[in-house]
Length: 166
Image (cartoon, rainbow, N blue to C red; front, side):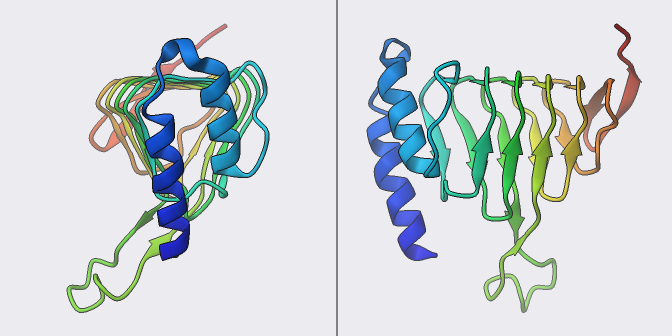
């Protein structure tokens, strides 16, 4: 695990020296980070933070705004047409609640972001969650449970605010 973290830190350090105008170089470094080529429609504005990389998969037409953090130990799938606002944290891993286990163990659960989702600024998505197709996560929300398709969720913890129609 330590080798994976060191690798991610080295790649993200290079990525974070780039700007919005360096989109091709950002795509190349992100592809190296996740060990898969990203589509030419992928756009990420640095800075970006992660401790992994290979457990991230992204679809086409993905937008990741600046200052986002993806911890992917549990697996992170991002489908096509997803928009991720600034300062969003997508965190698949954590530690047990029990004090004697916190430093000894890491727990990880996958996160799935389905097609055409918008995650607004400063939201946090916690491991084990699926964000359903066409949904919106409101700014500042903390998502701890699955988000049904075609819904707006918000708050801490996030709850359904309303359905989203066509």
